[in-house]
Length: 378
Image 1: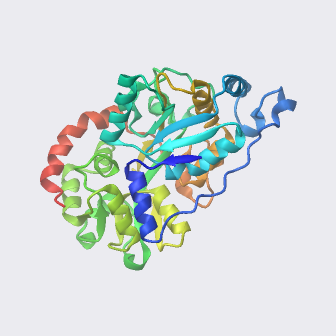
Image 2 (image 1 turned 120 degrees about the vertical axis):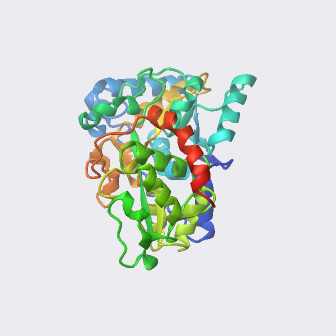
Image 3 (image 1 turned 135 degrees about the vertical axis):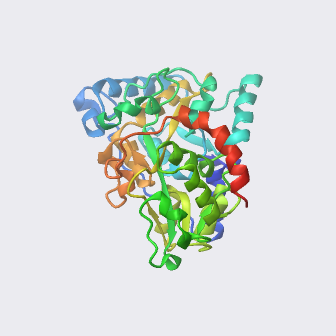
């Protein structure tokens, strides 16, 4: 597997963790049922073992055979969370040994520039885009209906956030943003709801990336306002308490270095990775109204390896892939693949009952950005 370090919040954060001695060690890739499906009907993967339908197993078999026949031996992915996906990509390579994964980390303006360049030049080098704000990039995507993707009944009201009605993206897993804790500095403080962080006792003790910059630090207060956890007054009070650390990655690194006891809207994967590497930190969720992002996967139009790209989108719904996702601190839709030691990887235990529609956040964003300019001062 090859990773091309270009730019992006996730990559910047990981480099800062390396500098601070808190880089995570990826979990081992889980074993798949590759080659065991013959007894279940000549499928490459065993549908029963992978907890997928026979139709999905048949699609995976057909796509894999087509990829080999067409000489497609590579999957090129752009992801803002490349470090978090290493274990998953390793599992994909182990399942389909003829295929290697090449990744680049891009978000925001650099991502748009790359996608536009591929379209304008006709030199298409990317197969799949992985981006929580994938709905903003559907113009670059090709329609593809993923056979193996199903929405859990409890999240049926948020189905359009997980499967695009036009089949331009699917989100086979989600990610929680709770709060990070640097244990040596936390003392007796133990927030239970988001408004606790607006109280006077937390003043100067909460890190946050600059919400005037695109990314989770901007999205989180908007999401929490849209789901009813914050009022405008709460956001203003939060602004008075937090220490702005520039980029989102800077805030993550600041938490690892103990610059404050807490981080607002901390990513589960980065904090868990640092904890596993020995840093005195913890990831925690509030008791309710947690900020969650969908991890949208898009098949890009004119992908250079279309069979492999579709194969990957199908495979992400297998138990092997879902377990790899859970091991990274993310939340697979299949709760049986969650990490028992990490309750936030089980969205049922995390009390998730719905997802704020991305269109609501996008529509509200301009107004909040104007507000952020006046109250969040680095």
